Amino acid sequence: MTFNKVERFRAPDPLERQHFTGDNFGWFVIRRTGAPTLNICAIEADPENGNEWDHVSVSSKTIPTWTDMDMVKKLFWSDDDTVVQFHVPSNDHINVAKTCLHLWCYRGGELPRPPKDYV
Image (cartoon, rainbow, N blue to C red; front, side, top):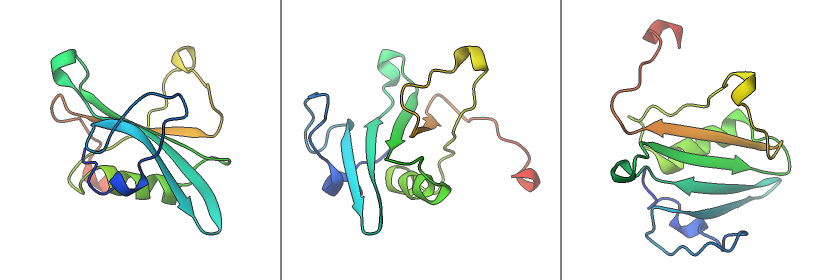
């Protein structure tokens, strides 16, 4: 995960967690003309502490679109990274914010993918 493309969007965290330019986590706000503002919380993987997943949550007044999520993927990761959205079993599903979606990138090795022709 790289924060160099998004530093210009870094904003004060609404939960008042401190973060500064160059931190590998933070709150980012992308204001777009004619489209809802995207609020993004990003946390880079920290394998030394047992966290092997980069995580970005994307929220807005409406559910983010595919185009929104693709833009965020391109801002935080390289074209070579596999980034996914999970649809977990119902028993594991927690819906805190109805208009928030999540992107995940595994840093613990190669994430299995379906055959190229099926994607």
